[in-house]
Image (cartoon, rainbow, N blue to C red; front, side, top):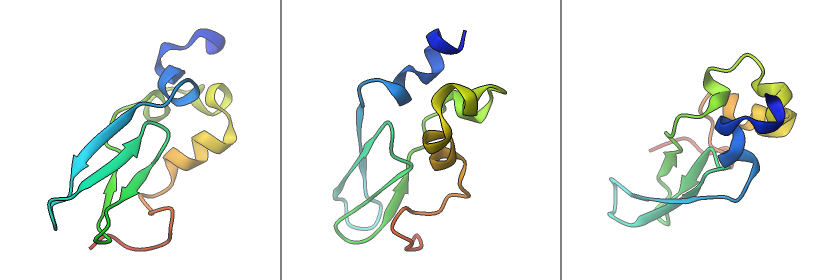
Length: 85
């Protein structure tokens, strides 16, 4: 099933854009389906909270590959090294 896993389609295929509203300034934060987090112009960091197969599938690392797996299993660290406000 790893070649046809529907849960990995959003991670391996075309990216989907999600817009979140920043709770600090009301600005828009763009987060793509392959992103762990996105940063607002004011510096606030918002995380991609969509559920994906990496969170529950025993074959996730094998299916999506090391890079995507590692990106989504980090301990909620922003990619740019800054802490959430």
